[in-house]
Length: 223
Image 1 (spheres, rainbow, N blue to C red):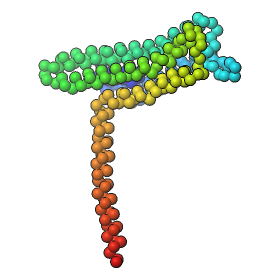
Image 2 (tube, rainbow, N blue to C red):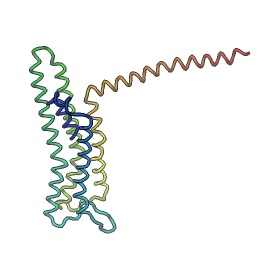
Image 3 (cartoon, one colour):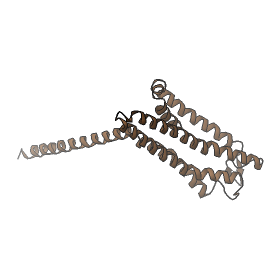
């Protein structure tokens, strides 16, 4: 969500963004989100965890059904609906702003860059939101159905839960890739790096062949 807000500020308030938003601010926001997540998860894990049949069960012991319902709905809202709402609000408003700017400059014949930014932002919004829903909806739904005892046979020790948990972890791995590959600056930098590597390879090959020829000549010359 920090990256989403950072991208939104860059589009909606470009002047203030470049003046006030620094690398330290971004790193501070990321650190705050990690600490907030740790504290929030701990508030659910430690009070309602216990040992059953020699197995440690996380978030499985609620004093009443109503407490389970409250914790499940609260958890589902904070970890699922809130991020989706942030995606929709930030990217939706950013698209509105880009369209307004594109309309304002269209008469001057400079709408190509605006159109490209709009397309990139749309692609990023769809990719990030789709990946988040695909990766996090199953495990959050599992929590909701299990803690509210709608499906009491669900648990947090079988292969089903492990698969859903691993799927949610994948989202953290692919998000940087989705953000990076939908921005022209990253793609240009990657293309430049690959061309440099290729250029160095073409320079090294002739040099190696020349050196091998010299070594061959030095070996043959004494005879």
